[in-house]
Length: 53
Image (cartoon, rainbow, N blue to C red; front, side, top):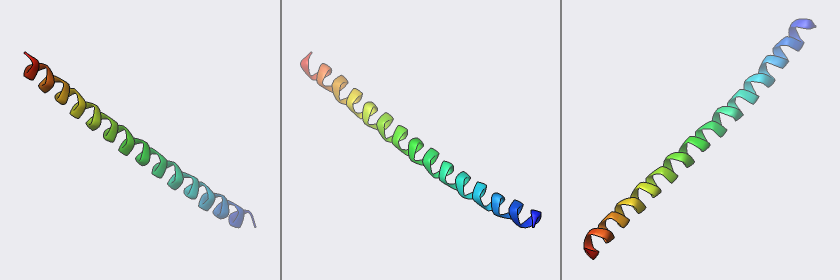
């Protein structure tokens, strides 16, 4: 009986861990996307500054 409870709990924890891993991956993807967007905007502003000079 105890082994069955421990096995069930282990499965629950693995499910939670999988969810956390997916959330971290989503956050990383979002962060990378925002960083790339900011880099692109920065380059565009630099080009506009050069064009205005």
